[in-house]
Image 1 (cartoon, helix red, strand yellow):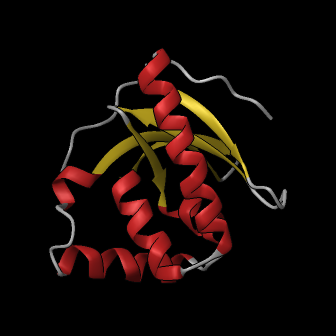
Image 2 (tube, helix red, strand yellow):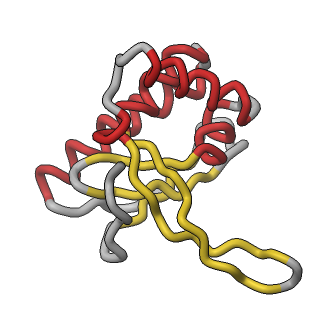
Length: 131
């Protein structure tokens, strides 16, 4: 799998139109990255559903796991203390594959936003967070 993500990656906030979720999205190597929890929140589905779809995508060789997965250091609260853990993140290709499978309106909204955000990033070299 890919190595740990660099700490100088850009963070962009995605706010869903229905206001039910606000998700911090990582911009890294010209792609967007989300972890399993973020995808579950994004698509309004249980983590087990998202995990099952990802497993099928990789088992069927629809995507190359090494090319679409990276690890990002995330601080988590455990027993009243903050612990840094390496969390598996998935790039836009994997996010879109899952989005088509869960077939949700939220997924469609995210695809539109992601396309606009990446175009802006590639043209300008940065993205303006507009909430």
